Image 1 (tube, rainbow, N blue to C red):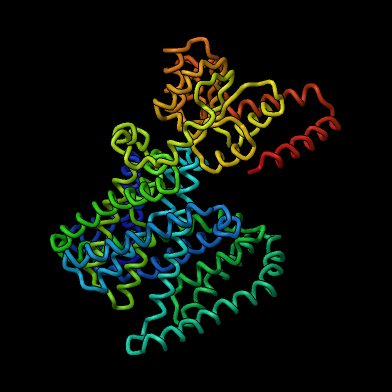
Image 2: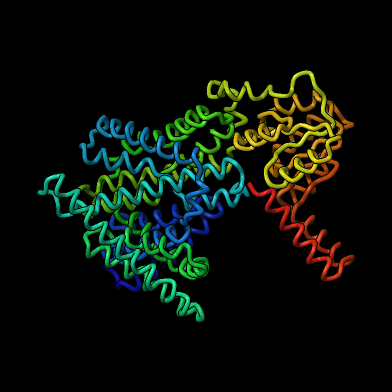
Length: 561
């Protein structure tokens, strides 16, 4: 084998070159790293013949990854998950693992292998989905929030699975009752020790070192590694300790600073982790796992979106929201690969299963990326066939307050910006308006406030036609989705040209194009906010601006949902 440092250099260069290609193809970088491992491995270019040489780097990468996951998982995040994300997250994991287990048995896997693989297939990639939703500016949409909530639920289940697996290391000859008691006691010691340190040492220590960014960075790493080693001493994995280290720091005011400084280290070491997975893929004959890999990939790409669509329909969500949320879960996760690697490490799985799940990961991550990025186009193609997933409860809601009436103003979207507009119109009393929204929680609030409304999604042509039929003077869309607003403009310009159309854009290019397509006023929040500040700077003194700030703060608290 070539010199270790030279091998590492070649790996990094290969990651950069393949990363550039993958970025051009608009794929996640994890694909580049895995392919780099495959190409440099023992059966192709043979630059690396012993993947174990890089296993320490892999462990460090996983530790940093879970440390940052923990840093971003505070109590507020749990509160924001919501009932629907919790129920769907648990339901999807249960149904996917159950069906996946039977598929595993059908393709010839043992009970243990089927159990590991079926659980691995239930987890979707929080990191990849957050990145894709951010790129699409969909992180704050209804489907984006629900998807992130479900992923948080999956992350907790994944952490629990890691605890269970590491707990049974070396306990194969122990009865299940003794094993459970030992695991519980070890977990209690770990958690109580962390709680004690958190209340007696951690806040004071980090407050002290926060005066120096360099010292804060080193202290964060020391805390992560310290709990990781303590976790290993108790018989758990370093992954568990790293995750708990992050959770304990999540509520501190320095968590964002620590995250930003550790993220580059995480990115480097986790890249080596995925390269190492690629190095192990070709250590066996790929043909032996090709058929089950195709079967499991199709299962993840089709079943996960389908079960989410069914569950969300059951809870009264429009089929489009269920469809888009489902697409975000059509791939397996880093946790899936970590789980399988851990199973191999404790002797439950062989290299063939690692290769199988890695191939499933490459396939599902690649294909689901295209599915997510083009979700609206896919819905336009398949939406008409999904009518069976449209809840009857939604159809009843659609007709609430809408029959045989005309409205002067229609508000599309009553969350955030729309909430303020709706509240102001309602206070005027003399404005005849109706609100259309596809968030059941918003609909429930409008129902309580006795505001005219109906449940609808303006990406649906039938809903737009219903709005056109009201012959409104003004339509205000606070939904910053270009395709939805374009449909709104086209339908109104075709059938009701006199209507004044306000639409919202999420970037400058969309704003210009919507004007060209016929919008009367395009709301671009960043520019509007800047113009408002300029107006205040021109016309108000310091005391007036302070009073404006107090009034704005009061309104913001009133609008907070």
